[in-house]
Amino acid sequence: MKNKFIQMLCIIFTILVFPIYTYAMGPTNPSTYEGIDVSGWQGYIDYARVKDSGIDVVYIKASQGSDITDPYFKTNYTNAKANGLSIGLYHFLTARSTADAITEAQYFCSVISDTSPDCKLAMDFEVFGDLSVEEINEISLTFLQKVEELTR
Image 1 (cartoon, rainbow, N blue to C red):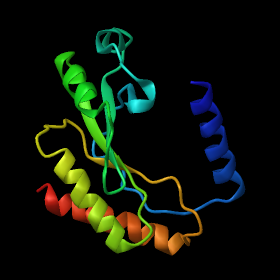
Image 2 (tube, rainbow, N blue to C red):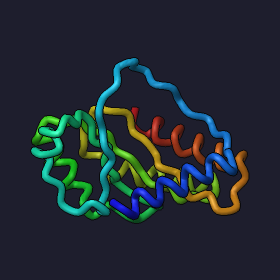
Image 3 (cartoon, rainbow, N blue to C red):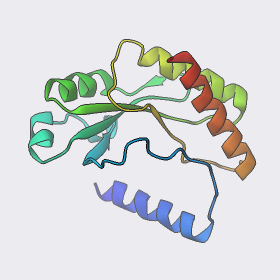
């Protein structure tokens, strides 16, 4: 938890000091829900306790890059569903080109192919290295468009 807090502070600091303007899609529903995102970093999660705490939505990391499936993906998905939580799935994007983005989108879609998420699919793109704002936007858009194409 301490590492997550420090990581979040670094992200906030970076955004405030070096703002990067990217495009985002707005919400399609004006309602708000209490939610969390989870991955293998949290280890085993007691989803009955999560539900009892007032959480409505769980975004679960499914994959990363073009060959990593989160080790707790299936367990998180199964247990969150069994406890009546709404499920969203996300991919941790590491692409450095649009070609990489397409490959990662294909991988993400293959990993989640036998699931039924309740929420929109999402990407987590937070390590930009020396990519320009234009490259970040182009890679992001390419990934999202490919995921949308593959999941229609």
